[in-house]
Length: 468
Ligand code: NAP
Image (cartoon, rainbow, N blue to C red; front, side, top):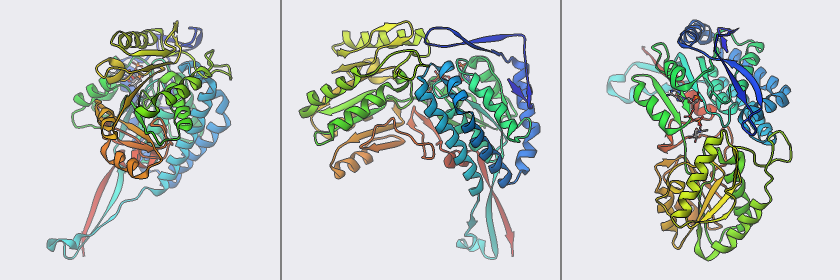
């Protein structure tokens, strides 16, 4: 752990293991109540320093962190792959993206500004001028999931520091190592002690204690809807942003480029074994091209290579735990019992599940209406585009969705009708670049990430008005 710039040890430790085969990866100390309190107090003590730091100084620290992360990219990629079990080639991409997230945060620090308020638009505003400045909210509790342990943490830490806040970060228990390494890297870049603290330990106890601490001004959470909702209900007057789950859907029209759509859907369904919040889980394909599209999907799926995450040829490795793999397996069984056809995959070995494609998944089974978070996709057919849109919207979630079609009118019509935070045309809903606004509606959360948007959530506009 890192509290107030110091490496902190406690009496309790937790072993981190490679999810693929259970081999040991590292050991972290576990925070208790005392460490949570110490971390918040350290963040509080560093808050005046961060608040007073010039935009140029904040940007410079973030830029140095960007550069240092690129210099150490391979060791971070190895850490991310080993703790999360994601294939090394995907972990390398995550590190590249994480470095960009820091660069975008640094650039946003330069752009942090308020506005001039048109006071004289009101009769009572005559003779008054006003402007807003953006001030940090204070201590931010950042709680992050296991699936992108580095980049999703930096989507919180980067904008928080750019906005002049201080942070206490609680990474997922499965993936604490990259978080601790990142806190060390920031100190080397000149970040004041206490501006970023990392505490490791179980979310149900220390995560909740952190989020509810009186001196925390804001909770920024990425994870499951269940935990997000709980924190939202307990947060009282704290600011809260939530980045939660999805059961992403994509529509494939009869006029679509089927080769492209099938190749991208397979990539979007099975990357990191489907453990991506915008993983393609539901595909609705126009009935005339259903068989042709399915053939292509199966051909691409057959090419995927399962294996050890640290081998560069591996496309698919394990899920985060065997229990999670068993859950997804049981959802596939439930769908098959209800009439779905399992066309490929679904076989489990310990925590690894072969990528599974099902057809004709009934809308009431868990695979259709909940977030699978595993390597499985259901392909259903439709006749009219209106029906496909209704099926996409028939979800408690609303993070991203997409359509493949060559007809621009249809594409934009669908974009207006689908209720989500982001809609992708001729691209899978699993697509994300780190500077875009990203977040959901319904159970997928509230607030937006992407450094420009997160920094707005993490700063308050203060009005300064004067009478001439
Ligand atoms: P999770 O179980 O909700 O855990 C997320 C984080 O919350 C972990 O650090 C966890 O700690 C902590 N936590 C657990 N219970 C808590 C509590 N009562 N109070 C405070 N913190 C608590 O989620 P996950 O399994 O790690 O991640 C998968 C989920 O994240 C999926 O639903 C996925 O869709 C979502 N996700 C969303 C986005 C997005 O941007 N929308 C991105 C990635 C993932 P422990 O690990 O110690 O339990």
